Image (cartoon, rainbow, N blue to C red):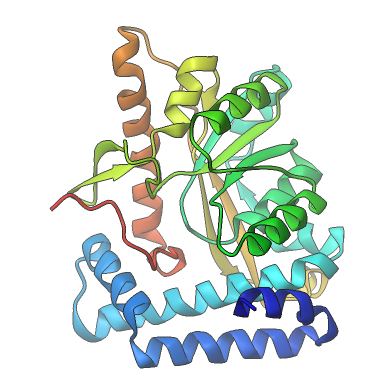
Length: 294
């Protein structure tokens, strides 16, 4: 059985403190052993920060512990109360989103592999609007199915990443209003948009801008990073760490030739996301190959 699927099905029988300790130990050990995922993370972080040696290792350690914390929080979420979910999340620049939703505009939200988008999705569904998203189809299929069921129980609608058929479903989802949130900093389509991030040429997913261009929806990029909690909020969250959800400025479909819309809008949301990742590199969970163009 897949190791994470085993943990997923059996974690409900363990105290949360044991889950958190196991995740911290696993993340620390993985960082110390410096396997392929860690070297990839460090290569990615070097291009973001320009750091080398000991300073780069410090940031990569924070990255591995942040990733481990994400998985621990995922295992904890099914038993987390709504009040704890709300206490763990703080919103910055939220009026951008609420004003557009109040005027019945439809929203497409590009995200990066940062923080915990499942926790944020649960929070958004409780406090902002219904969230529809896409998940990579994992192997074995049981893992993907369990993840979809889990996210739907949190109040989200999830489609598998299956090409043009998924895009058609997303168009219909946009028409139903709410938020379509797409993790888009890593291109899985094979037809990524070439942009600049941290002075490097990269390819990112075309989906958010393409969806906005077709439907007329507004893009609002979102960054998620961690923060320490204290006092009453820490007690309500039942955690020493929480998440900050930062909304960027609205990106609307531009005037001019439609052939340029996707590239122009992608450059706009990428500018916000790349700036935010550079400010919070330890929360960027990019342990996979990124879209660097050498």
